Length: 404
Image 1 (cartoon, helix red, strand yellow):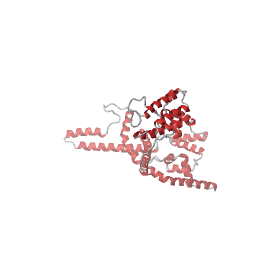
Image 2 (tube, rainbow, N blue to C red):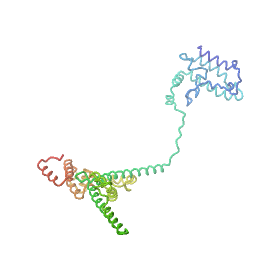
Image 3 (cartoon, rainbow, N blue to C red):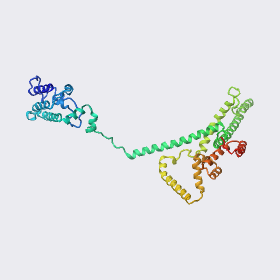
Image 4 (spheres, rainbow, N blue to C red):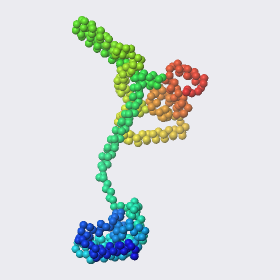
């Protein structure tokens, strides 16, 4: 017998005879304040495949960490098992101690079966420090509790509201981006040649007219207030002061009386025009075309989801009809030319064209790359002065090349 077997035998023998014990034994068979289970160690075995939460070696009186390369053989394990089974056999117990003995006897018996089976013992030793592999093979006793079910209708409603708000703000931001650009061009006085647009030029002209009317009204009101003054001298002084104020703050002079620079004059004019231009853009340009419009109910997510199938069916029907006419060798209809032209130049450019320019664009077969390039070049030339356009036309007739 090995040394470990002798040690285990001595320990179990002393436990059986009680010769070395000088303390009082409790009802559960252990010393007062101490139970045998306290010496059975720990092993991760939540599915109770081996010895449960206890170490099979420790149950039989062996210390796995101490025997090292000289583990107890089957004979030593059997000898320890016999001693402990006689000590904790339920038939030898009485009263309350019998209840504890039954459970311990089962543990001792299972530890013996595990450690005397070569395959089971090898697996038991291997899984000792590998709880991940144990869980992978046998699972775990952890119970997952799912949270109470949410109201599906309420969740969908919240998501729908959030989606509608998101699409509304996205559309608002798209319109605001274009509106800010138009306001900037109008305030700077950019012409078509300088990169301005028809909208910015028209808005600036109208804003200047409104500003002039406001100044005239202010001058008339100031003159009327001056006439209400008492006393001839006071009236004369008042009229003199009102005459100066009727002209409004001179853009050519600073507050101190010094002459303002051109930059300062332009900044002052821009500050006077800004509120008028912003108001005009908000009131008269709610839709810049190409999808850049202020948000409406049509831009909500629920509306888009509702009309999307209809739009899809219309698009497929048009495409089928288009290819059907091509197979029959028919010429392009006006509606087909318009759709192809809009696809070629884009919705934004299409909406920016006048009615005459749209009709002209539909006749130029712009879905052909070469035609589209020539058309875009001419659009840039139209923004230039009339004199330059004539020079360009003469130059192009002679050279036949593209404008760079």
